[in-house]
Amino acid sequence: MLILVGLGNPGAKYASNRHNIGFMAADVIHTRHRFPPWRKNFQAEVAEGTIDGERVLLMKPQTYMNESGRSVGDAVRFLKLAPTDVVVIHDELDLPPGKLRMKVGGGHGGHNGLRSITSQITDGYRRMRLGIGHPGDKALVHAHVLSDFAKADRDWLVRLLDAIADNAGELVKGADATFANRVHAITEPKPERKPKPDATAARPASAGATTEEKPPEKNAMAAILKGLLAQRTRR
Image 1 (cartoon, rainbow, N blue to C red):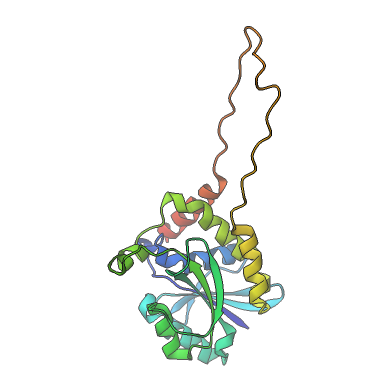
Image 2: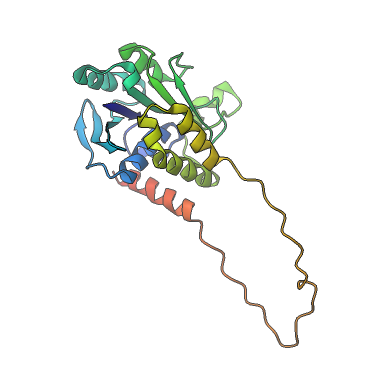
């Protein structure tokens, strides 16, 4: 069995915070792979299901970020798993917004959720680091992580969360490099192609002719994220 732990703080107040991107990723995986409803166990919201035939326990610790290790430690000890059977999904200040990196072991980098988990199960677990960017000043970090994502973040955020859920099969198989490469290929902005000159554009319109403007397409990704955050707020 693999434990996928999304980190965040419980409650509507924190639902849209940058610090809660781990909860958001867990929610999208939960929906995409049709896990059963969330239930309470191990001081967390948990749901057990399968991804590509592999048993997975999704977890969202309800202990608040700084005590996440109590929840994760309870689950690891009860299920008799190794640290390498745990993937922790968390926000990462040292990565640009929308970037994903996989890592095994290492320090906590000042992240209190990782510090707490390491104190319970050692540092040998896998980490899915999701970039939220750095505010540029250490004094601004606390406010940055506990503030909501901006509307301008919605496109990359939904694209990232969808890519994580769509490629979770590689993650549960332990193919971290393949998983990260596939997410990167989906989320990396594509270079814009310059449109070819339209030979008909310079032609004058015939007398009396009118040109109808199509209404702009709705931003589907923004709508999806808006629904996700609204759902988190209602809980």
